[in-house]
Image (cartoon, rainbow, N blue to C red; front, side, top):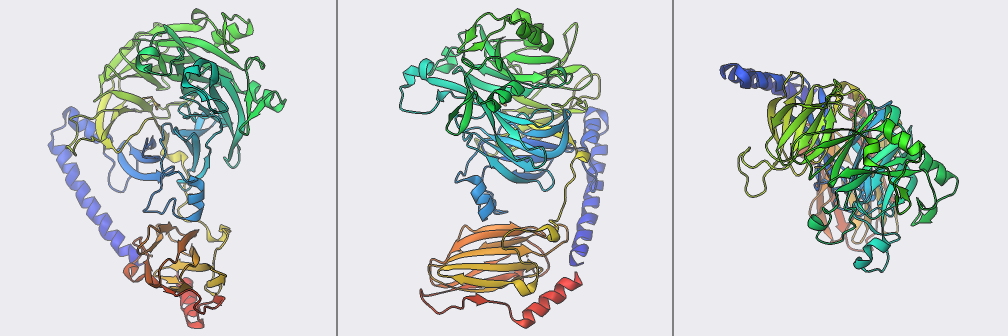
Length: 636
Ligand code: RUQ
Ligand code: CUA
């Protein structure tokens, strides 16, 4: 194959460079730096042990890294158009984006089976527009965007899948009136409501649909985690602003000694909806805890908590007040006992509150500004300390003490441990996701890259191995063993039943009905069939291109001059793009994705004639073209 030779040269070059690099590392003379370098070094041609999925924040997508090399492998477009592959340009992805060109993605959530990552799907939230996307890990593409979820305003505590991916969740960070209507912001405490939503996930297809919503007090619902093991069936949500301030939150929402986390019995909530105990609001079944009991409880947490994290055993729920120097560890058994005994000490808008002392197991003095906690599966927890710019390692269980600390650079938010949200974390690595990189990288002007740092957990002390910059702005991330992900690299043509597909040269054609023109074409190295498309001014043209290639890595592009129209068509795929013939004249198009030695020749023309010019209702390729393509396909 033509590409074989080029590929061979590239490999040879990579091996040479690799050998040179290895030489450099060796000449640094061992020591700490040398051994750290060895621990992240993945030889050319070899692959990483883990995939890491980093949320792209207000870039609206997912960054994929290999760990331990910390190499950026790809970026998956999710909530934001991506011109190189034409995400948001072809009709299917355009419809999925629903008119939005922005998202703020915070929390990747890998699908789970029995509480372990299963490598099937990745869910990710768009906070401001209250949407959840599902990426299929067979092709690393976004296949569904669910939402905007009705009644949710800013889905931050989202999606945090349950142990068998029964549900993904969303909760309103900003309370608003539900239903939203003409009210005064001063009537916040009276008219505004928080909402927690449980979104069902189809166990076979991963398709998301509405499960239930629960009306909550108008606090700012912040983060979430799923119960597992003994706490299976429960979902936990932290909040701040139990003061119910609507302005100057920085001061007014930091008054109370205690805020809360909510414990939701999601099976009970779904049952109540199935028993028609909900009221439909904007198409969602909303449960009101004043009327429907036994679905949700509030447990006090000191000082404006942020993260809530359930340990691998499912026995403990760890919350940390941002303005406190401790992690509060709650025992799920104690919470459950208090609920069963109805040992409540009041209620907030119908939601019973439990006593702090009744639920608390331990307080761990971790340090300043604790945000999130991860686990190693060996009995230790790791809490990020935003104010101290450190990670604290502490023992789960008596004496509940800090055993190690490591500096990070700087102002850590989330941290991600290898398989860290599962029942069986692997304890190999943690990645610090730092909010500020200050002096760590070459300056690129006022906007610094974000800083991620790979830390080795395998020794008795945490060891910083590597710094890698990321583009704006990873919040959370998850890391899964590479062997769990089974991708395919071509879409089998036999299974392509997309509307508009063309699998044989004989079926390529241009059809006209009124001013709508459908081009049913095929792409194969190195031409478009048809490569001449004749239309009239004002025609609405739909190009349906099928890539007949079945070789790895042979994607073709379709870009139209003087337009924003471009897309990529992967092997075996059919994609449709709409283009309006606005002006008379000749309008070239070309393959925008390098595909062969004759890639540059892969081009064509759209001839746009005056309105009303005579055009045939159907145009097919001539016999010679069909024969040529068939010969080419037979040779593959
Ligand atoms: S948040 S820095 Cu958007 Cu997950 Cu904690
Ligand atoms: Cu096809 Cu370049």
